Image (cartoon, rainbow, N blue to C red; front, top):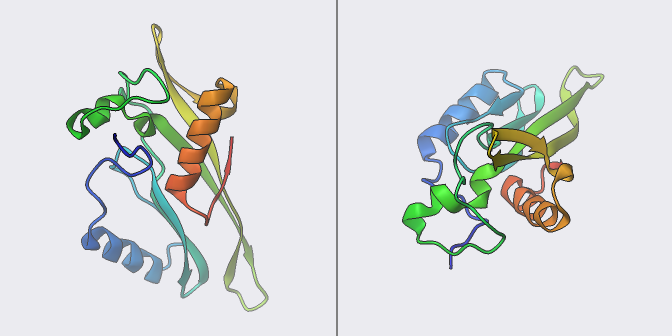
Length: 157
């Protein structure tokens, strides 16, 4: 079967990683990537200013990706994954709270992400807080979002 917790698309290349590092070295405290459909790891990194955050992808906020997904277990050939993979419907809004230390450097105090879900229906696509979805879906997607974003960020439903 398909491994739903893995990003179903091309992994980040060294070029994107190098650019994110350059942005942090140039003074960016938070770098948020976009362009991939699925969520990707959030990293806490050291910068010349103290702590910094790189969020490779928080998911697509609105799309018809995953529109044909119909349940928690939906094995499908990888070629069709963008249409049926529930990970393509996971979204998160991130919040990074920094504190300025006595030496002027920044310290990351909290890094949280609110998990959202792209709900497809007759009225179209709505982005809703994951906590509003039925229990089985909420639990499965919360685990998937936590796994995708990694341990640097605390995921809230």
